[in-house]
Length: 184
Image (cartoon, rainbow, N blue to C red; front, top):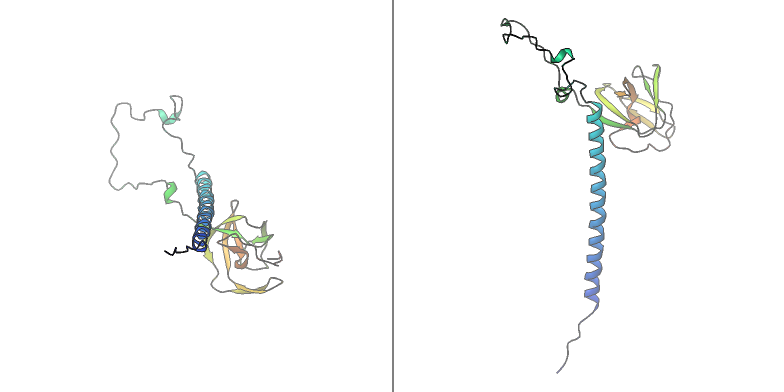
């Protein structure tokens, strides 16, 4: 009778692979949760900034003019059919702009799409701005100190002010443009 020798090595290799896979999954899930939380925070922040200040029915009391019945007899006057109706835009009807991030510390927002235009404000690295869906038709070459960038100018909104920034200074992702000077 000969006994068959079983090797210990394949079992250890499988165990190491399983431990590696489990640790990778734990890391990936934690990164996804953190990213999801940051997106939720951005959404809550955006919703709070665009919230409508219109009073609700619960906030009205008998002393406010809005709570007084304009037609106490219950008979409202008939409107003619050619009277235009005007509706207020709701939060969902307001334009939604893409978010961009500043990639050059000290990037200058200008009144027009050129280096000769007046400076409106100067922004810090990774600040979030709204892209107003306008950009120049052509690109412009500007020396950033370490590279020649060939980008269009983008119209943005930052802290209630609208202006133009050079395209190399903004991105959809938070990333720093290495070696760039803040002259734009």
